[in-house]
Image (cartoon, rainbow, N blue to C red; front, side):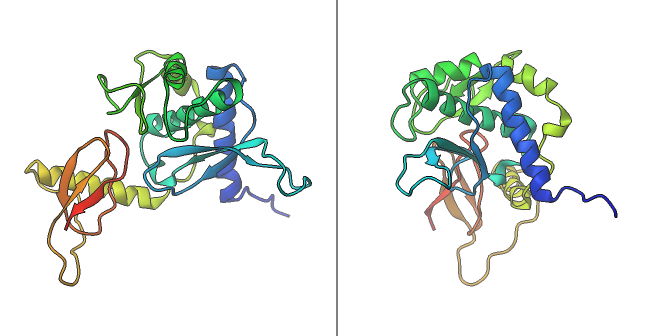
Length: 235
């Protein structure tokens, strides 16, 4: 009999688990617990943690959860390695807070979380660039030059890199690139589908960091600065 090849599910989540364990060891000294890893298309989020969301199946319903869930939005997997794995480490900092400290209210990123981010080589920023606020409700980040995160990412084995990406992420990236090129008066980077029916040719979109773009209706685009999805504010 031919040997059974790992299924796409096994390949994808084996790499995901290996990456989680790798960064746990290299950046957190093994202080993080095992978690339930997930790929979730949650609106406006590159990743998120659902703390104490799981219990063992043999426990009674209503038993307090003891296992965290860490999810990454599959739409970002077509981005560069820095974006994908900084999202993982960003969420691991939330896991660290739930296990070893005092996390703030849901969705908020407090000073303690920001300090932990910097300790592992990621600089929190509301804009995703130098100069942004380091705490807040919606936070992005960027890697510290020659910091621990970049060193760990550089040394990470190739087998820990996710082998599959969601093609919807390719579509979103092409759309955002096309909108930016069009807004700056240069040729579009990709052909956009023409809207059907009687919809207007262009609508206004905005994101949480205040960036506005105009594009064709029914686009699904993500801001490259704050990493949040654009929303229609006029049509």
